[in-house]
Image 1 (cartoon, helix red, strand yellow):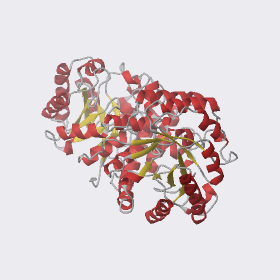
Image 2 (tube, chains in turn red, brown):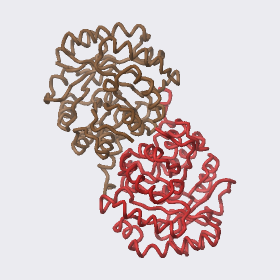
Image 3 (cartoon, chains in turn green, blue):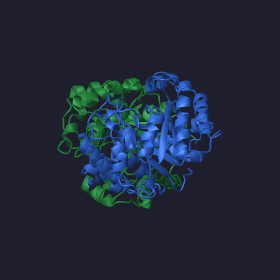
Image 4 (cartoon, chains in turn brown, purple):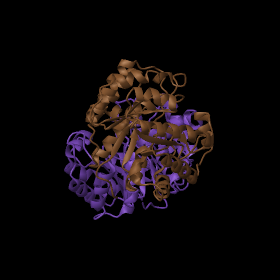
Length: 303
Length: 303
């Protein structure tokens, strides 16, 4: 196996992780939590979303959060921005990077964004162009790359078509999402093998969910293909709201534990990350799917 | 990546999975559960342990379970056997394969078996020789191969020394245990790279725990090294009794989900396995760490 020397980890917990949570975290707690995350060594945190508060009430304090946190040098503070209205608010709140998102599957895009794939492109283009004018970098997300809850298997050629359009707009990085956590390592390699004919590996990030326990196995497969950027949500936040115990995003601490153990540099201190994870679990009043958090909270480390 | 065409899965849930559970499963329920497991396509089930009932009251009905289940052709019914007294009971109960176990770390062996490593060998040798006379196959387990809760890092040369002694006794297969779930894929490859200088890969099995979320990632690493036998416990049973939410063994259904998805033949039907997993979760009155079970029980499959 051939592994890279270092990896970039993108923390998406404050946005992707919180957006489905029922318990609304107070703004001051979000700020304290993001400040903790900034202090772990993470170089990237997606802190909120500038969607209309009607859609995600949990993140309606986007401006307060973005202006309330301490900005640490070397950390990119990103936010999800669905349209130019959101971009205006994000600019005022001095967001570093604009994230845009869409789906590789028509039905999922329709249900998620309420628009067809073709209708979505011009809206995202406006955001990317506007962001560039404001000297913000931009990141694209494609969901359902490895499977769609409505359509099943997703054609890799559809993923390539959407990715091409996003890169043409000028995004700086593309995150490929296994939204429902169905991917396996062989599929990851087959998909990447195809995508890497078109796009440089330095521009690609993998966004795995651990719904079926395969998140880190998929990371290993992607590492071997030369990908060096991975999304994670501290605590494994981001599970389905209808499945209290089910796993969500790859837990950042599980990712960091594995990478650190493999001697792959991440710059992130696991202990500090675990404390930030514990803090948000306490605020959400529930146990989180992160394996390392559970091991950390138990006495099992010494049994 | 180079993956094998087929893999052998060893189900250890009824023994390794149940031994630490507080709620005692009724004998009739164990029998019904093992019969369900036999019907999934699994070719190997470790059904109980013939240790003194004083040590593991949960498994004191070993004889009743072994004689009560339906024996399916093509399925090996194994049991853990710590000494010749246990072997006598196991023979009477027509166990197919005798499992013996010890640790690669002196302190763990002492705490677990109450004997030093050197004192343990002759006891196991008696079991292996006795089992062979009874035409039983034998399987050795080495625990703490990737780390010890008392000693930390375990010297790979110690693992080799213990493995050599067990193979000299005549065991048919050796299962290498990551007892506390600390291994990472690079370590798995380094350990296997060394071990495969001494022992054929066909004789080795990997026994991973998912304590830190790395179980399936470690499976992928071992697959690439040519190992084709993996232990799992349905439901991810076998967590530490002091950590209610913490993960235990690699969940067999997570393993099967990943292998099936990769086109690696296992002979196991995931749906049937999930039903057996749900059944034991109900009897244990708790949610289990298996990711696929949680996805199966939730509506998230279609969200």
